[in-house]
Length: 194
Image (cartoon, rainbow, N blue to C red; front, side, top):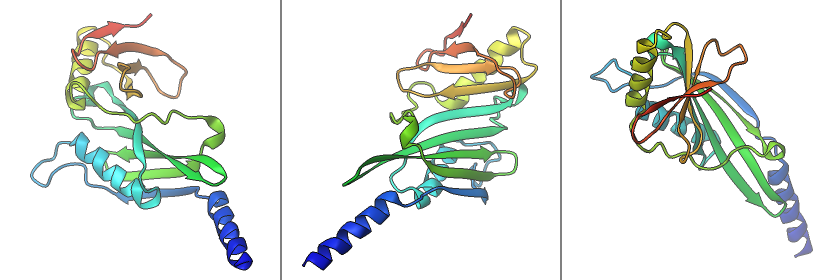
């Protein structure tokens, strides 16, 4: 009996301390229904989550971001970044496992990495994309930027928590810049941020 308990403890320790970090690249992914060429963002999210869950079962969405040229906002042509989290409980405490996924809509590929983020305390609150759907928010942002003659560069559209608005960053993402606009998810009202 004591050998069994020692073996059980050893296996539990092995599982709790195992290194789950992985990187998968250029996985083909379906981003539109067969009868359409348009990006179906719900299909992108669902198919990405299905691929991530093959490596990280029960992972759930915690972050959404679209990065692309302003002119491509209405078609959602660019990169969709989705973060998924899973809290793994064991005898030795909780581990926060995180998958950062990027879908390139131009070549229909998915790349993602999975890592242990326990020490960094990331946001693990599930993201529910309530209110207006993402294509409508993207079109509202595009129309606003176009009407203010600022639809000339890269735009980053993000959402992190259910109670927060959509945030838009305008300008090259490789430079340090702050959010320039927020969009109410329910009404679609655009507000300039100073």
